[in-house]
Image 1 (cartoon, rainbow, N blue to C red):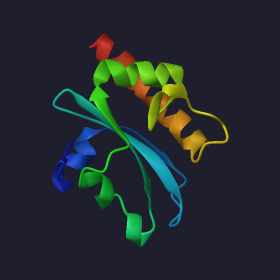
Image 2 (image 1 turned 120 degrees about the vertical axis):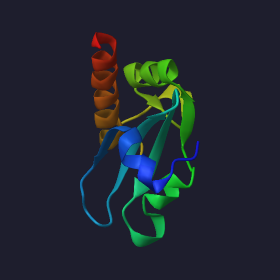
Image 3 (image 1 turned 180 degrees about the horizontal axis):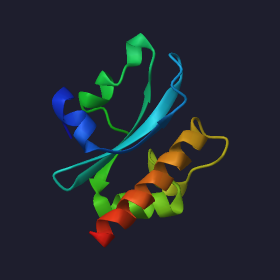
Image 4 (image 1 turned 45 degrees about the vertical axis):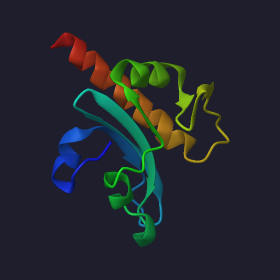
Amino acid sequence: MKISEDEFDGCVIAQDDDCDYSESGWVAVVKDGVAALANYSHCSCYGTFEVIEGKWDWTGSIPELIDMATRKADPCMPERTALKEDYDYDHLCRVYEEVLKWASRQENN
């Protein structure tokens, strides 16, 4: 999935990080019925432009994203539940919480 810089903000449905320059985080986006998840870093060599260029950890359908959020799946191995020991686990779980809130709002509209 490719998202232009101009489209990015409008496609984000969930994002979580600590807002530290060297910190990393997770972002979930939906564009044209396709969902994607990416882990990113704020450091200059791994800015969010890496995500915009299409380097997603996972892409699939919106129902698949909702299922993954419900199960707290590892985006790199969706059949596996993410573990607390996994890198950026807390950020991923907060993104999944926001994904489920977003999905609930979509159902109510």
